[in-house]
Image (cartoon, rainbow, N blue to C red):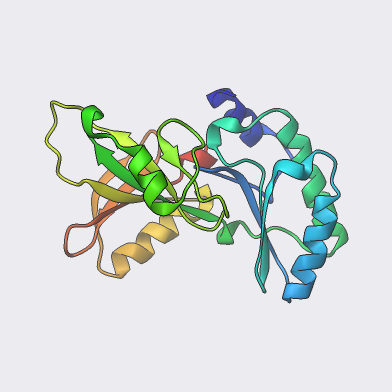
Length: 212
């Protein structure tokens, strides 16, 4: 699916539990115990067509990811999202968008030095697209190899990308600044902030995957 799949998902009413991250549409449902998370996971697993989603269980939440890639959002994911939310509500649970996030490791390299195969082998990761590597367990960060313009100087060979819900991104940026960070650049379209710590290490905090 193209960029249109993301936009169509975001424009659909009734998907308030869901946040679109770099890895696709995701919802986090708070629970009171690991047993409750397991029961909810079992109910979600019964949703028709839900067999290819990624479900992660913790003692205080259940995370459901409809896809492993932003560009893989299809029209049928709208109904799956609605069905999962309906199951959660029958269990007395609603999604908490403030808990939804994804961390991606971006490895910058000029085209002739881009080496995603190395990262897959070293981390035991699997391919999803030509330029990335994903944790087969669904726990670790995605590694994305970003090709740099050969004419530009290579200043930072690696940085982190963090995607969160659009209504929480400014609070996340403010928290990072309060913790000693500084804004290097504010990208207006798509919306993102590049911040640096006191040593100059960089992170991009992004709202754009969740913005139409």
